[in-house]
Image (cartoon, rainbow, N blue to C red):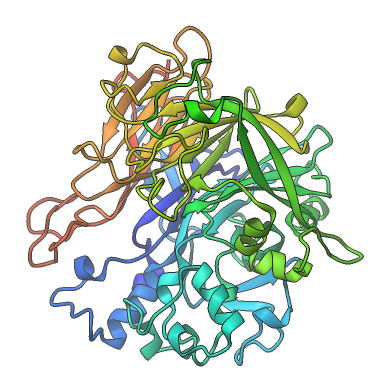
Length: 554
């Protein structure tokens, strides 16, 4: 039943047009909703759940609740309401046991081979899908984030190099939290040490072809992907920006060597489904333009009145039709793509405060990066504050604005500034693009970002450290009201705000893990959202529209 219905803990959302030969259905138009399902909260799903002894049935339900959902929805023109269209030919679930194809430079490499897949080209399942992106050629991208939590018995891996690589990706210790290794050996690293290498990629899905096999794009590198949002160069090549959601990890981009073909012919679509397999992967190094003694870790602005500077994109590896090339001494190209974090370490990339979602502005081309927080910044043995990450023990996070040199996304140079330094506006260590702080909403822990048709940036939060629930906020990025941040909605107890899709007259958010607080369970719920008393708490997608049917964001 779970494999045939919407999954759990919805995160990234994409709403795509559906042209069914121009027909409308009772005055309504149809669209395709695509959603990620990051993970499962078994203690909120199953009455009497024993985390030390899950049953096979509970584990298999959790496998089926992970992954991706494709659902055709029908819009009521007058109200904005979206209703799922049952049994539509495009409706589809991808789960932990679905087949995924591995493509690009690491496909078939020994590091990706297992006893069940001796060719290293087919993976069962996608794990911990977080934020993602929508491509100009009509597919969706899905980032595999905290995949480390699913794998057990790293302590039994005896090869020191393999053990060190696992540790760099947060995999250590004995039994896993969910105990999946009891029911499928691929989650037991003592039996399948390469299985973890088959996760941590960007997955590309064609939502218009229900028979297609989703593909894990290895040219985009392997790390805890929080986002993968593409834009096109002037000559039509996609550039994909990506964050690695970990304290002190890095910000990346991939520049394809192939041009997108326009049109919806079969040849064009087949060509465009190869765009992310060839090109160069880069990591970012940021340099501040203020003297080091003016960055004291408190968040106090330097003398020039803003946190800003320049940056360099450092090439890591290039994937090409005639062979792959590593740009990192001591690592092969395959090692760079499979162990991208280690490559970033070697070239001295800038350690960031959890770079999560990324969004290029469709109007200006500037790139906005949500840096959620980093409570370990400045601790003994950890990186101190720098101009891009200016606060030690950073609880609230910031949003960085990046401008490619000459507005060319293929450039290896860029300028940057902190657009927002989040927190209570009454705190002097906050900044709202220079806008008067007494006129903005408090915000903490920016996570997902999106743009509306009017050029405003929308920010959803995760882990609000101000004592409030998480929410969705809109902020102008240009003009006299630049930096004027306003809260738009709030999500329930224990939930984070995800997904956001901002249309001219409707906003969609994914309400993830409502009721997820310490001590909560089916028997002792912290929330009964959305169905009310007596019903189990459920992650859900919410659509919001103005009562008068007018535009949002103006």
